[in-house]
Image (tube, rainbow, N blue to C red; front, side):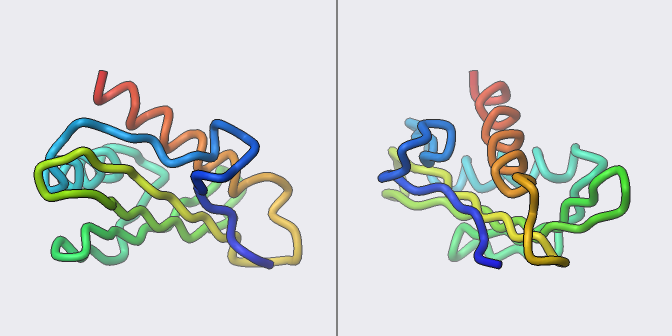
Length: 113
């Protein structure tokens, strides 16, 4: 199964990468802090030079999704935050990828407001 990810060309506005007037390094730290504060996320790897974080999201029934977040843009901004979510098992994710992306971008938006 292909991962679900943000895309500027998406017909669904909730699946477009959000844009922020922030420095890339500051947004990277904000993403790390957000993931560390969420009990259902575990950070697997961080690459500050690439502004990329890989995490696992554990659902209440034990299913695990791989979630990757990366920041694109100029060092001093503006930046866009991209998210990719892939369900680990089965042929269908039953909308979990979209929910993971929407949840993450909503939480990030509230922290940036």
